[in-house]
Image (cartoon, rainbow, N blue to C red; front, top):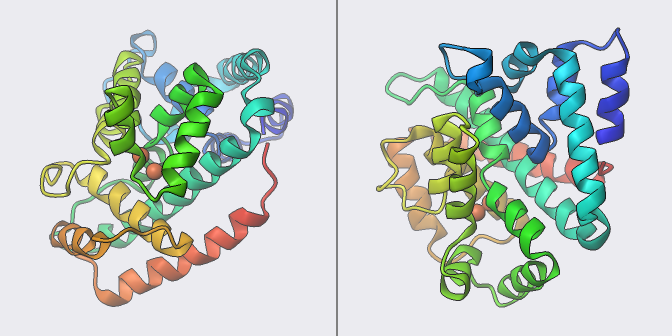
Length: 266
Ligand SMILES: [Fe+2]
Ligand SMILES: [Fe+2]
């Protein structure tokens, strides 16, 4: 992925739209692009969440630097060699939820009384929602990986086990980093609050969209937990989707899951 992005940036014929689309497949690079695009240095009045807008603010030179930096960090941390499968699973999870969130926000945008979230914003927030896991993986390495695997095998909810064992969870860690990096508030909220109950986050439609997208992805992957139906009903109180629209979103999620299972990684 880094190699593909580098050659695309060198190719003068490549459009920013193509570059933004490729960046949108990598949570780590997306976070850096957003952070820089929104930094005071670029003096924007409006907060940028859409990756295409963020990429056009930065321009190809800065994007090149970000890609280079990311590849250096990856090389030094050797995360990919040590935790290749975990990174692949993380990438698939994040991308899948980003696509579903993008679709949900498009469906909702045509409905009266529904929260209006720009699809580009929903994509970015969903892509980065588990960013804290990446940070914990980078810091704690294999021990976090083993910890995550055993939580999954036992069918325990990762963020609850993290709180019990580590005293904090990936949502809190990711939210703190996102705030420290001055990422847009929507992104910070989506990262920090994605494991809160829908009632508590009802004032943040972006978080609700990420939660519903994750719920649909869990159904497709067969990892939905007991009580998921109750959460779904609660989410649908705030996100007015009809049963047919929900069914359609699930069908699309299933198709995207198949496509992602066959997609090459990096
Ligand atoms: Fe997640
Ligand atoms: Fe999470």
